Length: 301
Image (cartoon, rainbow, N blue to C red; front, side, top):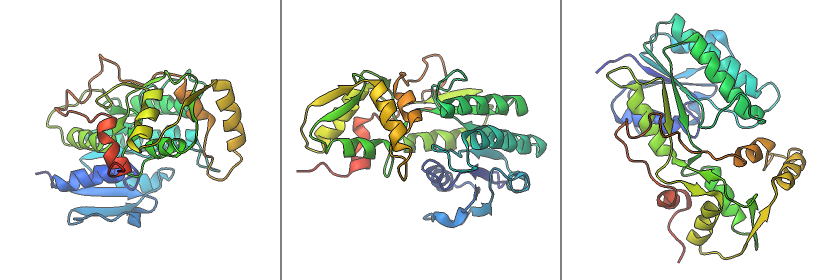
């Protein structure tokens, strides 16, 4: 087995720490690159190296990339905070990691993005993701782009938000709740990335990793409500109302709702049928309802 490390930027995040775990469990040497790499502990750290690396810092990125056999950029930002803007993280830092990987002659670069990215989106987040993909492609043409669908799993934001909504006497819906989604279990994405990071041949230029079932948003809300044994009618709310609420919520601590989230719910978010995905990685992804016990614990009696 190759002893050169697989470097994971964002290895302490929701997806990143699961990817690091998957790689360690498969016996690979891993270099965890993050601003605070000590934040997460792993069961077996024998082959783990921690490296302080801020993706906005040229020198730290170059040092983290040096000597790697694969680099995975799993850094993500969902809400802008001061200097941490969508452009700074998803475009400029994505280009910085790709440039460092090219200069260091790293054989493989995996760049995480998301299904549905578009440079024409009204969402600044989605546009930045698309621009980041273009920057990576121009800087490192051999890079592989990986677009997961909305991820769920223990400690996630998606199912927790739906569980919170299920406590209300009436369940509000984005529009009429007809937006189609294909949420993916975070462990499936981590496993797929671990496979791509160590793929013996050349991976495809693009993969879309989506879950085992396509659901309307309304069906997801009802599935969580029913799993928790709660009852209540649903209430369709026009997207204009959600945008107004998001404009108010942005002034609150933690911004419980953002306009980018509303924009995302206005468009279907499912994998393209002609793009490689889990089938090519020989993995059967979990469906949303199948993964609810992992997110919510045992079904209440």
